[in-house]
Image (cartoon, rainbow, N blue to C red):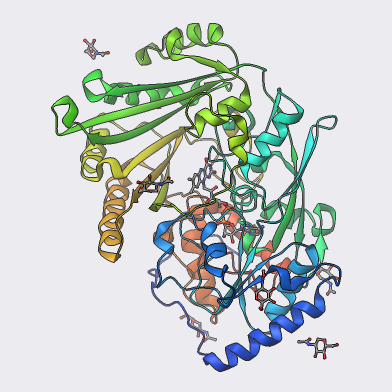
Length: 540
Ligand SMILES: Cc1cc2nc3c(=O)[nH]c(=O)nc-3n(C[C@H](O)[C@H](O)[C@H](O)COP(=O)(O)OP(=O)(O)OC[C@H]3O[C@@H](n4cnc5c(N)ncnc54)[C@H](O)[C@@H]3O)c2cc1C
Ligand SMILES: *[C@@H]1O[C@H](CO)[C@@H](O)[C@H](O)[C@H]1NC(C)=O
Ligand SMILES: *[C@@H]1O[C@H](CO)[C@@H](O)[C@H](O)[C@H]1NC(C)=O
Ligand SMILES: *[C@@H]1O[C@H](CO)[C@@H](O)[C@H](O)[C@H]1NC(C)=O
Ligand SMILES: *[C@@H]1O[C@H](CO)[C@@H](O)[C@H](O)[C@H]1NC(C)=O
Ligand SMILES: *[C@@H]1O[C@H](CO)[C@@H](O)[C@H](O)[C@H]1NC(C)=O
Ligand SMILES: *[C@@H]1O[C@H](CO)[C@@H](O)[C@H](O)[C@H]1NC(C)=O
């Protein structure tokens, strides 16, 4: 089959062709009743499945549903709700959910940490169930073999904390937000500040356990290399239920150095960012410097707005080595000794998560007890050439309109990222990219008017950036889920399904899309595991 990743396919994205299943409320109830019976019949008798089922009749239904909804956009009364939540406690509950949902024609959504930007782990327009993985959170750290077994419902904070209990010189390369779940994060790639030294999370996964469409439990050996390849970056939700990962720990020095420097426009922020684009991806692998551009209210400084660039850095070593390096390679930033904070790696994870200095590391274990999410939209881009200063100025114009409600985050590539081939995992954005952009727009106002307002701002920003970023395809990062870049438009006509999946699939996976579709055909030919941006099975 020929790939069409170089050119955008000719059909337009047909939005709003989401198919509603026209079953009556009655047959839905019958199916649900049978589903519960089936669930009970197929679950281990020693692990009461009824204790894991929440329907709207259970008083705690909404609190269980909402506690892992990270995006306020999907916390409204009109957000489609699942018929039931199965918060599996035993692997047989997962197997039974998959088998019985198919038998009774119900869709499932799998949720680990609930951070999906578009809520795909807990919202669907079809009658659906949420298979919730938050009880599957065991972690087994083995320093002797430098590996760990991590269940999918464990959070990144738990992974980091449990590693640090056993060793001060081991770590794992993954994201900065401690509440993100490993189920979604690892299967979507997973990047963080160790990326330039060690690559993505998926580059350090050596085994996995999944439940497949027919309820079997497979590991790397039994699922085969294609499927094992696919779940490391292709998104777990297309292939099965990830139960656990086996990860390879990486080594870090006992002391690392972090810094956070801010530059305003008056302090030549634009020039420094311009220079950052040339420098950051070429620095030694041990050094990661992220830049965040934001326009904030400047009334305290007697100005309407203040344009700021935050530089967050991490060096795998002490400041006495970092300072001379920065003096030679990036003097424009003007890093000083007093900007540098030396700490253990586990303390650095708190710094990156913006906890106040001195926060106990056990805060990494805190799961949300109260719902207080903001509404947000994420988008992403990849950059191959420095954005000219005129381009940076047009970005500022939009950022000023967005104000405190958004920012763009630039994450440098290079280092280990350039050494791994684009087809090693489904994540294709390797050599040739100097940095990745995350666009983030958030708000607290309720209602569709606010949503439309901020969505338009996010879209404007994305549009303004077009001349400066990758094209044909305009690449995107799966973990910054964005339904604007395409959705599956028909589940019944295979040709249309595959064509529409190519629209977003080429952006997320480039030339790896075809292998993903073949892996999908081998593990889930009937396309039971699906969502608005899943991988369809390859045609014959
Ligand atoms: C505040 C915040 C900070 C973030 N920081 C980073 C970062 O630093 N680096 C980065 O790479 N990303 C980051 N992300 C993005 C994040 O990695 C993705 O949203 C990721 O998919 C979240 O995983 P989750 O398990 O929490 O989400 P979920 O919403 O539970 O799942 C996301 C997707 O994965 C599927 N899925 C979840 N669990 C399973 C499973 N067990 N088996 C099969 N499929 C499953 C879901 O169905 C859904 O499609 C951030 C997001 C937020 C909101
Ligand atoms: C569950 O098992 C009982 C007892 O064997 C049986 O009568 C019933 O039909 C089964 N239900 C389903 C939905 O499989
Ligand atoms: C939800 O309610 C049902 C019916 O009363 C009950 O069997 C089940 O155990 C409840 N779920 C939980 C998690 O308590
Ligand atoms: C389930 O699927 C796996 C892998 O696709 C296959 O090896 C196994 O035989 C199947 N089991 C059943 C019971 O169909
Ligand atoms: C900004 O750039 C100008 C001109 O290059 C220079 O004179 C000035 O010192 C710089 N300001 C800062 C704060 O670096
Ligand atoms: C919840 O969010 C609101 C609005 O953003 C904020 O004012 C409040 O302090 C937050 N509460 C907690 C407990 O974080
Ligand atoms: C599916 O859609 C394609 C493209 O619109 C069309 O040519 C084809 O006939 C359709 N197939 C079926 C089975 O309806």
